[in-house]
Amino acid sequence: MKKLNNYLRCMISLTIVLSLICFSAVTSTAGSADYTYYNMGALSSSELTSTYLLTKGTVIVMYPDKQTVVTGSDAEQLVIENKVDAVVIAGVGSSSQGTAAFAKHVAKAINKPVAGIVSGYGDGSIYTEGTQGYFIGRSSNIAGTYYTEPASEKLANLYESGARPTKLIGHSKGNMDVANALYKLYNADKGDLYSGVNVITFGCGVYVPTGVGSLSQYLGSLDTLGKTNTVSYNNLTWVSGRYHTTNPYYAYTYMPVENYVN
Image (cartoon, rainbow, N blue to C red; front, side, top):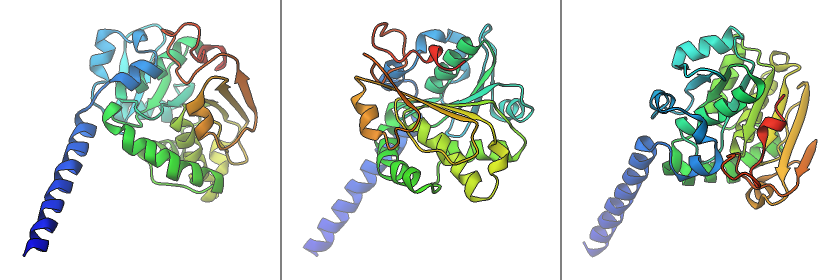
């Protein structure tokens, strides 16, 4: 009976912990990770409101010179109709608002609409996303195999539906998610769908399958986190004095993505 009671207490404790983790992940929004790593200052209050609490795999289209935001199936259709030039995926700790900020940053840099695919739930998903990236994403990328990931699945589905973006841009684990989608297509003998696309990564070097148009990777010389997660140094440029963040708020140490996405 005593052993049974101990078992029940353990199960109840585990259930409470898992419930708190799930609740945090589902209800979290832009937090410290977003404000640390992405250009949240580029978003207006209306853009923040429009991109609040969207689920993983949701597509968001941001514009460089106006506050219009398109989300969900309407945004997907814009990508499928090739009315956006680039698709971005942010890294661990990003929320839908962080995704919007990353997409807005790139949109301003290339002066064209950019789509972002939501890859996390903010600070509430740091542990789960970080664990997946380090233990699953890295090994899968090295092996050239696909792992289940909503953002990657969405990108692959967009390609299968007719999307042909000219650029795929990732940051941190987002790089692995981009590559993951390409490997899913490659291993299904659908490499022709992404043929010629330019892949640009920041803050983590990854492998991509054959058939892409180009691979350009950028890693800050002070980016310890990026170095830890890097699995490939192919086509990698070291950017002196830069850390893992892409947020211009950190004027002298952020990764200036705007210099490398055109």
